[in-house]
Each structure stands twice: as structure tokens, then as C-alpha cells.
Image 1: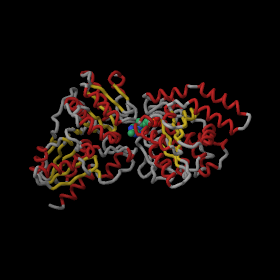
Image 2: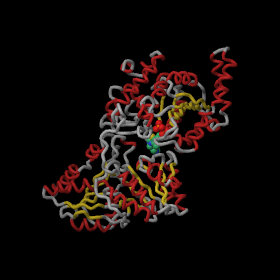
Image 3: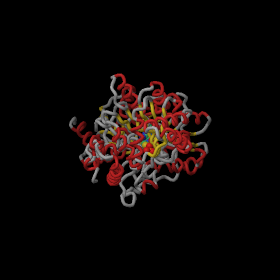
Image 4: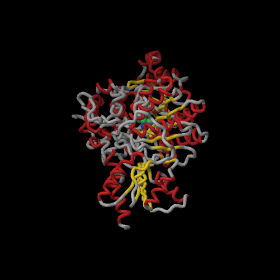
Length: 618
Ligand SMILES: Cc1ncc(C[n+]2csc(CCOP(=O)(O)OP(=O)(O)O)c2C)c(N)n1
């Protein structure tokens, strides 16, 4: 770290001799590899963007000039170059740096993100604010090819074409999403990359005037490009297109950025980079190294992976099994075949599998369309990304009572990815939709039965389950459909009863054990369904004791506990109630278990809350 240790700010970077930039980029890469091997994180995208980010901070006057990173998972070099090198080893740890960008973490983080495809809109807003205030700073959006598949990116593009303000969009094309690239946009970008004759034509144009002056040559180059690409997609949308250029060549990036920095109006610079650049294991296996846990930096081997089946794995297996028996079952992912466990389905049933790109809203309505024709679609999506499709689920699916299954993985607190990724809103968000069923399994075995239930329900169905290992329970050989809206009593208590849902059932049981040791007889019901609720079980709980406790890994506002209270009120029942779940805060990042403990959903914390509320009243 000969050079990097002396760079505390981008201002210092800009004083450096440009010839040293390649070495600086190497040093940044070494820091990223070493750190992420110990913390886990988004490695491949960040390594690929090092040179591009270094060139941006070298050429632009940050933080006055604004750089908006889409999603933010590729921006580790940005953190390192903007005064956070010393804290970089805390990344993704509780109290440490976020794995994404946050406007309250640094003045250099112009805009926070975590969900894809927002950079163009945010950057355009900043550019228009600048114009309104008659300021002169530059605004740059850095968007990768995957994030360009999200609908909001096009909404922004067409708006930018209309507004015609100065805005530079770096389209960072690494030809990969998390998984292999999908979609027609990718084909279009590849076409641009392979149109070598365009570059040849540009050189010809430059040669014609090259001897006259450098400036003239540059203008000729630009003219050649804008003519050659004038009929391309971006040109039609009002953008001037430059590229493709080698985004992993920092010297070339500095040159081109200097050339186009002052070009007026909306500009797209198409950079081509390699995911995992500079780290052989990540270059060889870009899917594995997109985002991963700790690993051996020497070999790239993962360390300490659990051999218990995950909820995702249980879903994946159950789905393949069910699809073997029913060929109308069809699976849809929004660019996450590995994360959602659909890759096994894809490999087995390629004709019934769709990866629609980072387009959750489209995925939902596309599934609705399939369902109108008798297909049984399952949309496998992370809970947090499903937030994007409230309208589609409400209007296109539920209002028409179409039997689409939404498998919401990563429901609850997810851990290190933090507040952009916690799936703690879905019960509140979707519970108000008439006719929609919301189920949550207490373990991986129940998950497989619920998936069968979902396909047989003939109604819109949300199945939500958490990130990580299952409980390690035995898996039944046969899947059976459950009674929709029926809870399961695990034990009934005389002193109080916990009504728990999904991932909270086991901590609730453990809490009841702790209370029992203190002579407090607490029952537990696995409620299974947040909608429809089991009114009979609620009545039974209140018959045993007026004291009930609801436990959920969702926001308390409008969540499962609220549903129980609504039922109690509407049914004219009387109860003393305690609701445990996530209070009115955004949960930060950290280890899943420590965050659950922080929000009060751990056996000890649940037991303590119950003791506090009810024991004193005795
Ligand atoms: C709305 C939304 N859906 C899904 C994701 C999960 N996700 C994170 S990065 C990524 C791939 C992004 O691909 P690209 O923009 O090409 O960036 P790269 O990782 O290749 O650098 C996906 C699907 C997300 N962050 N946001």
C-alpha cells in the first residue's frame, strides 16, 4: 500500500501523477480482496469497477461533482478513495461501514441505494436541482448492464432525453448480472461492442484532421461516433453515446472522461469491464464471487458454510419435485436464479423457466398473464424486492383472483446487507389485499408442505421464509397440502399464550421454556398464516388465558400482531396483548442473530419482555 496509504481524500488523488494510477488500482484491489475474504461481501462487481471509479474521482471534482452509483454494491473502491480506507475492515459489520452507499455515511455518497435501477432518476433529479439553483457542478450516474433492465431506468432515460440537461451516464457493461446476462438489451450492447468498424471509421475521421490539432481530432472522433450511433437506442432517446471503451484501463478512462466531461446534454459512456478483474478465482467464477461469505483469499475456497439445508434449498427441492408431477408449474425470477434457488428448476425445466432481468414489476404481471392461460406460475423473489410490485400484485393478480404464487425469500432480518435488504415489510404491505393468502413456515419441512398448499390454493398466495439455514428438522417424504388459515397448537399455557408466525415460532418456543423454568406456564401456537388468520386459535388462546403475545419478524405497524388485534376487536373478544416485532425503525446491518437480539426477537429477549409485561401485573 505504498501509494494508497497516502490518499486520504480524492483531492489528494487528483494531485497524483496519472502514471501512478494503475499501481494505485492494484493496491485498491488487494485491499478489497483481503478485506472481503474476512467480512464477506460483493467482490466481483467491486473489483471490476476499481479503475472506472478511480478515474472518476481523478477527473471529477467530488464531492462537489456528484457520482451516483446504481445499487451501490460495486462501490468499494469509492469508499476506499473517499476517506474510509481505515474503516474498510468494518464493512458490513454491526456499527461499521455499510456494504452499500449511504448519504449519512459520507458526503461523497451522493445517493443511497441497495435496490437496483434508481441511479438515473436520482442523478437526473440532482442535475435539475443544479440547473434550478444555477450551479455548475457535474452529475454522473454509474449504472451496470443488469441495472439497466429495470423499468425505472427507462423512465429516467426518456425523461432525461426530454429535459436535455447535462448528465453523464456511465453504462458499466460487465456482460453479467449476478448470473448470466439475460434480455434483449444485452444483445444490443454486445452488438455495440462488436461493431469494430465503427471504431475504425472513427479512427479514419480522426486521421483526416489529426495533424491539424488534438482538439480538432477529438471533435472529429465525437462527430464520427454520434453519426455512427445516431440510429441506436440511446441516440433515439436523446443521449449522445460514446464507447465502448475499456473500463479496466484507468489511463484510457481518464483520457476519455476528460474529453467528454464538458459535452453538453445527456451523454452515455459505454465502458466494458470484467467482473472479478484482477483476482483469478473471481474472474473464473463470477457468479460465486458476485457476493459471498468469508473465503480463503489464496485459493478462493469458501470457509465455514453450514451443511444444514437452507430455506432456499428446501424451496428449490420442493419446487422441482412438484414440477415433476405438474407440468403447468412455471418459475420466474427477476435476475436471481441462484439466490432464490431457481437454478435447479432452470436446469431441469428450461422450457418453463423465465429470468426476466431486474424487473420485479414485470415479473408479477407476466405471471398474471401466464395464470390467465392455466399455467401455474411461481415468482421467486426476495421479500424486499417484492416491495416493488405492490401495484402488480394488487391490481393484476389479486383483483382478478389469479392463482400466482409469490415465494418471498429473505423475509425477516437478512443480516449484513442491512436496511435496503431486510424483508420486514411484506406482511404489512400485502395483508390489506383482499383474497390474498400469506403463509410463513416455522421450519423447512413446513415450507415444502406450504408450497404444495400454495399451488393448490387457486388464489394469489404469498409464501414468505427467511434467509439462512433451516431448523435441521427431518423432511417428510410426501408433501401434503395444509388447511389454509389453520394454526397449529404446539402447547397451550395457563398463564399466557404466544401466537407466533414463521421464523419466530422456534424462538417463541425457547422463550416459553425459559419462562417455564421460572414457573410461568406459557403456550405457543404456530399460526402459519398471517392471512387468513385462525380466529378459532385466537379464541382458544384467550379462553386459556386473557394474556397473549404475538411475535413476528415484520414491522409491528400493520403486521401480524396488528392483524390479531384487529381480529380481537372485530370479534368482540377481550385480551391483554403484547406485540413483539420490529418497532418503527430501519434495522441497520450486522449479523442476523445479533440484529434479531437487538430488536428483541431472541428467546431470552422474548421471555424477558413477557416477564416484564405480565409477571409484574400478577
Ligand atoms: C430491485 C432489485 N432486484 C434485485 C437486486 C439484486 N441484485 C443485486 S446486484 C444484481 C445484479 C446487478 O447486475 P449489474 O447491474 O449488471 O451489476 P453487476 O453486479 O454486474 O456489477 C442484482 C440482481 C437488487 N439489488 N435490486
